[in-house]
Length: 71
Image (cartoon, rainbow, N blue to C red; front, top):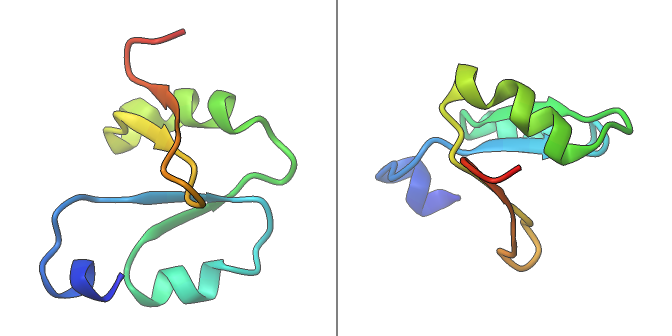
């Protein structure tokens, strides 16, 4: 996150299960949205046009969960 803070290379949007990580992520200027128990794929599909989201990846291992053009 520090490298991105100095030289931004993308605009990440974090979907968080709880509000706990939001103060930390917001400190770096990232967009953070709480899921509140919602399905991450459904949430990202609904917000993708607004934020220009092309992919949804797991933060833990980088695994691709959803990408634009896939159902």
